[in-house]
Amino acid sequence: MLYNINDKLPVKRLCVAALQQVIACFVATILIPQICGLPIAPAMIGAGIGTLIYQLFTRGQSPMFISSSGAFVAAIIGALTIGGAAANYAAVAIGGVIVGLIYCAIGIAINKCGTAWINKLLPPVVIGPIVAVIGLNLATFIPTYFQVNGEYSLLGVGLGMLTLGVTALISHYGKGFIKNLPFLFAILIVYAVAAILTVCGVPIIDFGAFNNVRVFQMPDFAFLHLNFAEFDWAYLPQILLLFAPLSLVTIAEHISDHKALSAVIGKDLTQDPGVGRTLIGDGIASTFGGFTCGLMNTSYGESVGTTGFSKICSKYVITLAAVIMAIAGFFGPLQAFLVSIPACIFGGVASALYGYITLSGIRTIMDNHLDLVHNNKNILIVASVLTLGVSGAVCDFGVVSIGTTALAMLIGIILNLILKDKQDRSNIE
Image 1: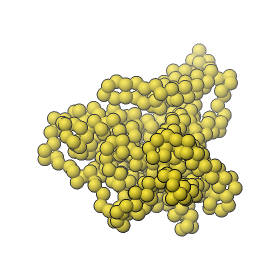
Image 2: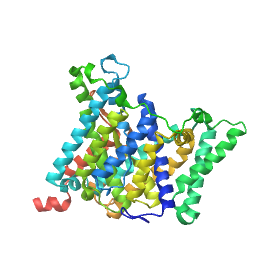
Image 3: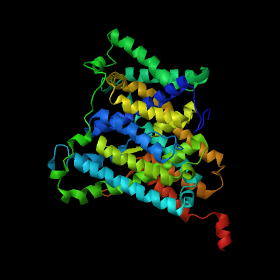
Image 4: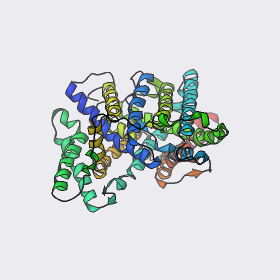
């Protein structure tokens, strides 16, 4: 790392590094509310303030940006329609409370019992391929980015590859702080190219986002629609079944993301500030998100990748990024600019960003000198996790569905526990 967690940056470098984090996390931040049929601006504010809450509970020692969680999409959509309401925000807010309580309860239990069991359940032979799987699964979203005017097109692929190329050139040949902020400058350069093409008659950028923009715009917050007086509490068990099982799955993903960031920055975040603190911070932020925008929060792989590429993991960058994201929800011009960036440009950035996460997992395997030639236990675990992790296989129990990554992690943990090393077997004999 060029800048470690507690390092302060020059003001100019701090600002551009923070903006790069915002842009990297922006697509998923606005995509989740769009899928759920919720307004975008409150989601941006929920992400920004949620990250500040997370930073507060982790004492600024976990440089992770958290934002809208895709894992809860089905639960949120289900809660919004409970009772036949057009948008049952009260049910979603209660879901956020449920998620927060579960996260906090497990976080407190971890603080009491210690974290040794985490390293036993998630040794490098499990966490390495899981981190790689996280990056590979994120990569499956890249084709959805290569769109122009809502349709996958060759032009979209071209602009995406141009963005990737500019990113590579800046990262390899850039000098000074520019070298460490390749995504931001690549996006700005290709945005300028797209703007020129749009002016010349090739519609790429929708400048309609700037129409009727006011400097200050009051978002349509979820809490403005809460009506607990008319809420039927008989639906509470249904809400519990929607959100509680998913919380257990996302906790596993939370640990994976923090293991991934640990591998990138060279510090075990499960020990300092500790999983207990990160879970409590994430849980409180999710409860806040439920009331603010109707969305739970989660750690973002995009943030991990950006930190790795920039080699900047300063808490001041993450804090400023959170402030910028929150302000953007109120500041019309900045919000319009971010919304106007074509998805295909983000696709080019994602091509490198998600790959970096995958490489972090591979590096975890290499750094721990795992024998993948003669040790059958290691071979079976890594092979099974990688195969299941990219297979798309899920376990759908109706009320809850265990996603591909969570399933791969679960199998990896089970195999690691039941397969004993040869040395362990000889000791038993």
